[in-house]
Length: 585
Image (cartoon, rainbow, N blue to C red; front, side):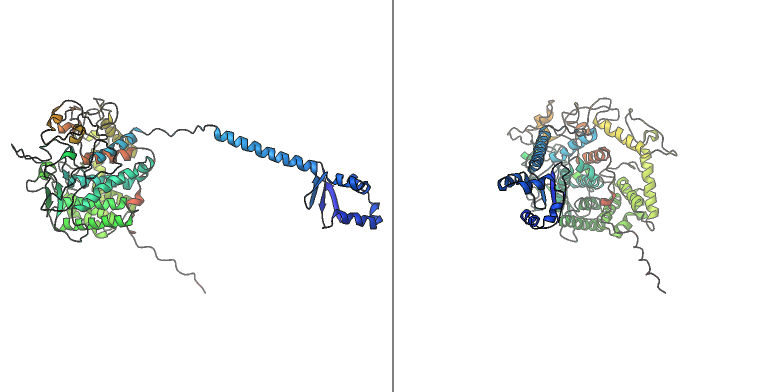
């Protein structure tokens, strides 16, 4: 049986319901004349009436698609339309691809981000040892490649680390604080660093410091009796002409005089700070399990040494006492204990950091002359902020709540004391002020105050000068820095040979990008004089603080990453028991 219909495209079509061929149907028609009683359409009549030759020609007007017979003209027309459509679509796609696309350009980086990128460059200029190929400071090279090896009392490599400031001394105490601060900034703002493409850079910066610290003591041991505190010498006795890193003015690459190594056997402040540095770095490198564990082990060994061998590292008239004298080690115990807890999750460290007697010795209840000043010497302020974070985010409760609440309150008081109305600190006259005390101020108020301080450093000051080298149009040109002040011209300038570069009034031949100099006096005065380091010298600790402040203020969004900070901390409370099984009668 066949059923005939009309193609919706306008041509005749035949839909097959059996497998009989056209010849079979013709034979059936010859045998069954009754079938001719039906009315035939024109197509069928033409098949029956046409001769053999005509029938072949007629069939060529149709295309048999199996179960569908369509007009050849319609078939050709349809295929042609499809091909034309495909060609047209291809042409449109090609034209669209060839047309230049006008994407909206990303917004320019804000001033804080621009300054942050430059500030990170300062640490590249301070590297000692064999420099990596991507160090990106063209006037620096390998230097002090015999540190440690040239001292018979040590006899092992202490190559690496950072020069402290404009000289070539490696002071471990301020350097460790600097690395701790940089690690803290990464832990809280890694998303910001990643967004501006500087996360890898600052991780490399931290690792350079951590790798060096691991060389300064037996980092594979569980117990130690000494740690290196300094490489190089800075003190100059009156009338002495003995070459050292302060008496001589020469590029680090040209140093040819002996560099003594100073070790200490009772230096709680230094060891606790170095432990804090390695502990914080271990959180930064959580993605590298083996390296992170190596850092944690070293930090554990150092903190144990700090607790068992009590004493200030800078006692006894050493270089350290003259340049970086530590007033006590109690604040380092609170600071170091806090970082050890965050790195290990061991509650014994938290119990120590929150012990009331330890807090009392560290000055948490009395306000000394440096109270509220976070620096390489006073870590209490930073420790209080760190532990306040713990209270706010994890709320550990008893037995820590009382001291944590005290630290939290002290942090609030310190934040208010920074505001000009309280006159707690010396400040320049152009700083805006507002009230604190019993009045509530939103967090944006404190952020605005912080912005004014950094904006002052970057150029919004009476002299219209940026105190970060390389930022803005006007910045110090005569930085107190040996490497930056002596040209890299192939000439070896000896100990005294470089003095002429120290004395000249010409700008430094090398720009030490990102260096924040010591800055102006309390009256906004500044003298761009190389010999006056009180104005023009830059230090690791100062620049670490600048980097931390800049990343906190830069960009938008990307709040504090509390998950990373507490990644090693176990749950503060036991997990609730599982629900009881369903009751069955």
